[in-house]
Amino acid sequence: AFLPIFEAVCRCRQDPPQIVSSINSWSPAAYDLIGRNDLAELLSLRLSPMEPRPNPTSSSSDYSKIDELITSADNDKDGLLAIEEFSATIFPDDNRVREAARLLRSSRPIFLRVPRPVELSDHDYERKKQEKLSVLCHRSISLCLGRGMLTMGTHHALSAEQLVIPEIVLAGRVPPANGTLALDTSSYPPNFRVWPEFHNGVAAGLRLSSAMGAKNHERTITRTWIKYNKPVTPQQSDNAAGNNSSSQIPPNYAHGGFLMALGLRGHLSLLTATDLTDYLTQGTITTTVGIFLGMAANKRGTCDPATSKMLCLHIPSLLPSSFIPMELASTVQASAVAGIGLLYQGSSHRLMTEFLLNEIGKHPIKDQSNNDREGFSLLCGLSLGMVNLQKGTSTVCGLEDLRIEERLHKYISGGAEISDSRRQKGVTDAAISASHESGRNSRVYEANAINRDITAPGATVALGLIYIKSHNKSVATSLVLPDTHFQLDYVRPDLLALRVISRSLIFWNDVEPTPEWIDSMVPRVVKSSIEFMKNAARRAASFGQMDDHDQVYPEIYSGKGDATDFDPQAVRQAKSFIVAGACFSLGLRYAGTANRAAGSAIFERIIWFLELRDNKD
Figure 1 (cartoon, helix red, strand yellow):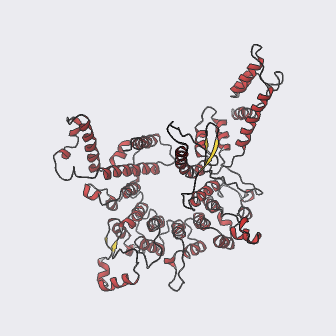
Figure 2: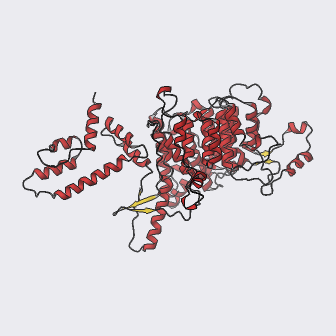
Figure 3: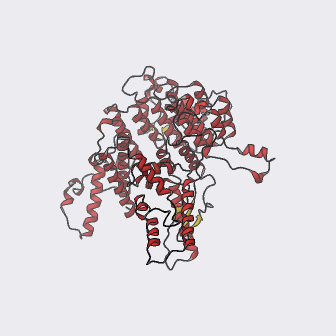
């Protein structure tokens, strides 16, 4: 019942009546009621006979400035202004949504304040401003993810209007003159804005409404509207300008993200096969990635044959040997593999399962590109987990001979790649070595051993997804954390975080929203080493005197084992990654529940990480 009154107050606050004369204007109390205390004070000064009358020209200039600010606010490209207005209508005294929108807005220059010491020269001061601006711009290009979540489904598209994609402004606003300082990109790679623009397009496209909630006669997003939003390609601009290089249009990398967002919202299936072919042949690399991921998300779990053919044609390992080898970018191959995982989600498709299982530990062939091997293997593991999502509790017919659990454990622990079963089938060492030599890479040599730095991340994620919510203790033993310093030295810290996440997926119901649960994820060897370093620093500060804290872990001071022989930096990194993985697991477990205990536990660890950063510990 109060919403119309709140809306009227908000509109009056944004566009109040101008103070032309004391007769036609409101009273100061009315301006105070709508929250315009500045206008109330200005009117009070005019009504007071003791105070000098303000200059009308200055007041008109003030109003012109206010109008300029309102006009600039109305030109909202990020889609955040409507959310601010709606939040102010319902919660007039709560500014948290407005503050979040301010932090996530990337289409305006960043406020840049750099203190200048007296002894600093002009050249050094400009360099210092560029360094600070570079750090802020790296944060600015990552805001698209949060903006996409905040503005999801808040825009109603019109059939005669294109969707505006906001620009990522890499510039700063320097007080007190508020001059604009552009970021110096001469030291950056030429393609450093490609993927930030892609994610910016995804965030803009997520503003559209979902296809599931719209009726057929109410749909404004059609095939014609999608093609209407297609930007002009460089080839088309060359043909239109007669190959005049001065009129070339730069590639639009954000449109690929827009296409992916259309698939996530369920609209990309409106395009025909010829439309997809035009996009794949004439678009940029981000357009190809957006088409693959968007179509796979739109057809998620359907095993659609047409989409499957499109994805498999861009994965060399799935092509017949008679096909001519194609040089495909590693990003395109990785996106096609990720699309396979979405398209065949939960189907336990044998061909795709066997293919993904082999690709995790695949050796580099000949002298093909070895870029992004780690990312490709990780995506293969993620897709393998998606294809067999939550299938660990039930025996899938036709997949027992693949020994998925055994091979994934081998990928995690490492060792020789040849299994005993292959030896029993008559495959000799000479034949295996000859096959390796025929396809040997001249730059990478891994013999017949498994490179677990490449295979372990994907295999860890795959195990967690396949056996999610199964509480299978036998599988979880493959993901146990090291309990000695010797074992800790042979596991990368980032792999510890993945193990914690995968174990939490398996023991889904055992995740508790408490700080004690996060602490329980840290192995005793890490806790004892951290406590040893704290006590050593405490004794150094107190000139070697013992205190009660030294008796917490008595095995440290008894000289037994390797308790005091460890790398302090490795222990710090291990604890940081384990705690980060536990916080991520807590967020996954209680996502969308607004659990205060989980939020408090995660926030407590965020403060701890901030203290580590500020103390440079």
